[in-house]
Length: 186
Image (cartoon, rainbow, N blue to C red; front, top):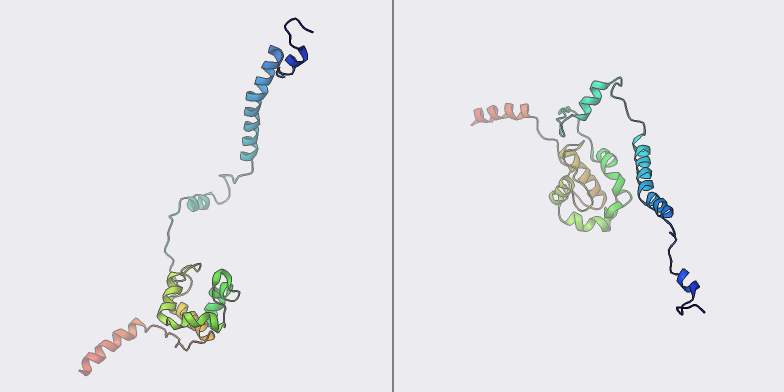
């Protein structure tokens, strides 16, 4: 038995892994300096991927695309023939309305379209142009409001409605010619 009344094996059980100053120095190095080098290495690895060079063949085009404005004006042919409701449906609406994705009423499903058809053509057109629930707004895209209206009528009529297809708007030249003729008739 020891002089102080304690067992020496009990005392060794409570000591840490660092027994001398050299071990303390190595532990400090590995705990603080080594992670810094690991982080620097990771940053270098991530940022060293290939990047387009500024002296590429289309440097002017690359600069112009980086500094372009957020919005732009696109001029389209206003005199192009209007698409039918079926054409617009196949191009714009079929992705969701054929499968019923995101809660869209399926094409030719009279039960799903009954409540919607009861609201009337104007409400359906407004929902299509401005968006509703998961459906994004269709107005202002590749198709005119009249073409979107034709697609709405095509889908609603396939679901049991009896809506009349919207007609193309009258040409401004025809309206201007008709106004003097009606004024002369009075």
